[in-house]
Image 1 (cartoon, one colour):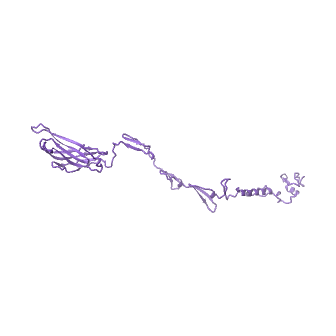
Image 2: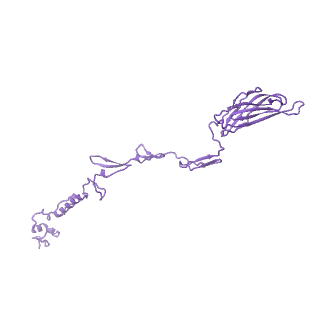
Image 3: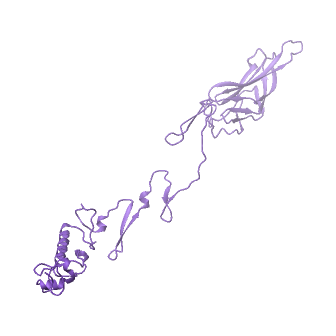
Length: 332
């Protein structure tokens, strides 16, 4: 059957109008009893409503279906196009909330809302102080512009510790395995007082009327290894007795050195540091050689002089005690 006066042969007045009858849909609907254009099946051009899922080509029934789908999605929690008030992390997230609540940060990250109460934005930042380690030797710090910078130090020259004669080196250098330099125990450690400066020996009275001090100032010094060395001289007049008397040998105190640099314990012990003998020719009608001399002796920090003679008769001699070459090695 055709639609009246329109040549629409596929339109049945007793059936709903099909899409194939679109060219004459209005008259077909009128012929089929569609007396108004707002009937659900006859409605055309409903407009575009994105939030509802409605497009302009839908019929009334399709519009209702789109609205129903939208309501179902709201109940099911499916986000609606254009409604970005809330957010979910994923499709399995059970709770929608504002972005500021959903987005969490931990140190060293920071988060702040910009333009609160207006066109709000969320700004993420990085806390540089929270990134800097407090470990010893850390070369990173915050510059005056608030940015990170690396401290620059002069590059030290490569150092290699090498042992030598009497010196042993162990360790690799770092704090966990430091260099250890061991020396031969016979090598003395230099002290500040081992300065090689000459000082006067403190002289003391002879305590013997037969031995008279005439003059002279002997000196001593501490070498850099702690050895005590003497120089200079002191002059004495010695009245020796006859060969058969006890006055042919005298032992007198000469002087001493302090115990401030070398302790008394380090100077302990007795030793003869130097001895000199003089030989005179025999007297008239005498074939016996005449001798006399002296010995420089150490007893702890005290120094003694021993004068002796082999003269037959009592003889007085002027003796110059020369300290050059007298050396004492302390126990250090």
